[in-house]
Image (cartoon, rainbow, N blue to C red; front, side, top):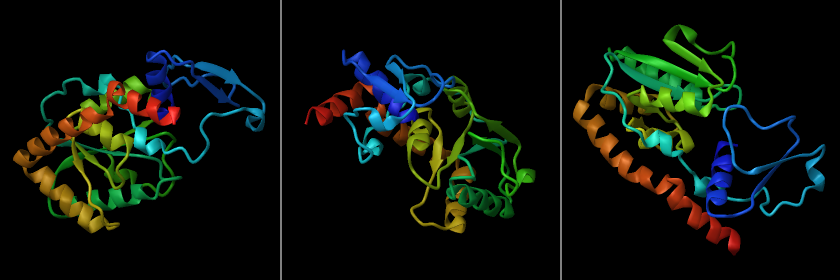
Length: 222
């Protein structure tokens, strides 16, 4: 949903007339949008210019506010893990990676963010902060307060972390131990964190609305 709203706003900024059809009772409260909202009882009767196969992952947009300057590093480091255990099995990988790093004496505060309250299976004794249902501006402030993001899957949150100057811990393997080893490397090496932040911010420029919107417009025109 966040990507859809960001894409809608980017197209509106280029003079396009964009509507968002929804069965919800009203606009979302965690993010504003300049698109027209259309509230319907059934989406089956809504004519859509984009079908469910539209490759949203190719048009990630990071809000400009996320690119702001971040504070200096924290002591101990703040390590962010984002997602809901109810529908994201990668969160277990993230918890496993954090546990592995701590087993090898790495010290950091684990900061959790989820759209919903924690499930009963979450190891909350390993978490120093747990945030639920943050609005966009609240997520921006939290991201910019952190030092490292555990990203078992790459996506919008890892793009936001790069834009915010947060080092991203990610490996291709579906293995908590390997992800934990990568986390150990990043947490224990300040020079590596600086390098990841620099490369991440350079890569994140491609996800600014001003860069994505022309590509999105051209795709839709085809």
